[in-house]
Amino acid sequence: MLLAGSPCRPAGPEEYRGCGARRGGEDTGVKVSQQLGKGPSAFIPLGEILQEGVESSLRQLLIEAFVSAGRVDNITMVMGLHPQYLSSFWKTQYLLLRMDGPLPYHKRHYIAIMAAARHQCSYLVGLHMEEFLRVGGNPAWLQGLHCAPQKLRNLNEINKLLAHRPWLITKEHIKALLKTGENSWSLAELVQALVLLTHYHSLASFVFGCGINPEEDQDGGHGCWPPSPHSDSSPASDDSMGGSGGKDAMQEVEVLMERMKLLQESQLEEEGVTQEEMATRFELEKTESLLVTPSDIADHSLQSNVLCFVEDPEFSYKDFTRRGEQAPPTFHAQDYTWEDHGYSLINRLYPDVGQLLDEKFQVVYNLTYNTIAMHCGVDTSMLRRAIWNYVHCVFGIRYDDYDYGEVNQLLERSLKVYIKTVACYPEKTTKRMYTQFWRHFKHSEKVHINLLLLEARMQAALLYALRAVTRYMT
Image (cartoon, rainbow, N blue to C red; front, side, top):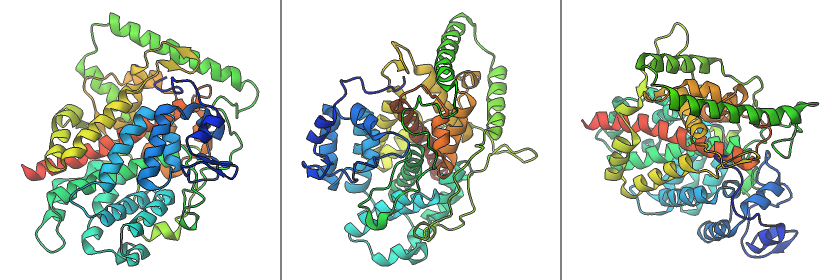
């Protein structure tokens, strides 16, 4: 669809070995950080990752990843189902962590730890604890946030808000960090920190949304918790609901195709919906999102290796339009856009990363193989936009030129539950949520949804943060 499997000829297991993976005790060069019997994901069968993911373009990326980091992690293997996106993601992350910038390398990894810990993602916490030590970080800091320098600890408030309620960030939060004194941040340092925080909050969403398994060679076995012990494993089309599920899953695809066709036809015929009606539809969707909550959630008690990096662990996502409460004003997307405002601000203060972030947003938003499940030659732009705009909707961002009625037409409830959970409180994602939506679609299509969630969520949080920086500067 947006997504479906890679358009190139699938590579077989033999070719996978040729890209340097270790398999069955045979080491052919590139170390994949995992004994592959388990696989990179608890949700996606290893066979599908090997069959769909390893083509010539990905093989080159895996080699580059190995040369850079000494191994190929499970995130890279799953993202490799979409090599074009992986290339863009990898360049951005490499710049953030390894290239020249305002912050020293060890502090970048510590900020990654702080961000991942907000979502209880011990997979990323463990990964960056290792990297922190590798680049010369002080081991004492890893005893917890209380052992870190005050300057880093001062990021706690904005880390908390960016992770859970970015609409609460104001210019006062920016001002507090930039105020003169021995623990003050420069504007350039702060912008790099904001990008790192939003990058790792969103990456935690991807880790939980795709059920990324811990790497067995990670120090102490750190990894995200196994998402949920449901038995409905392999293909996304497997019926975990019993009986007629296969037929029902097929019908879901046809219903979605028909709705897309009708919406496209009505767009051609309609003169246009009034602005008042558009506003009403957004408010309706925003209010309905309050009711989109999972019936089953993963219950994780915070592990000590994560809890020590978290202050105020009870603070979490809270719907901004609760009944009887004063809701924050809607963020009108055209008032502060990425294209016109956020991009230029980042490019001034942290030059190269603005271009790479822009490329990454564009790549994932436009990524398509023109397929939906078993259908080819499909224009999926309407569906991709509905997913992106729904993520922004649950974070309070409205596009005045978008008809939010399309969201209800195209995203059925189980998909909405999954999207909101992965975007807002990813640590509560379960395997059952993953298997219940789009049951007849390929896993690579579900991974594409997760890439859209990752980037839409990151852009939403960045827009709130950069708007606050702009207000501070003006």
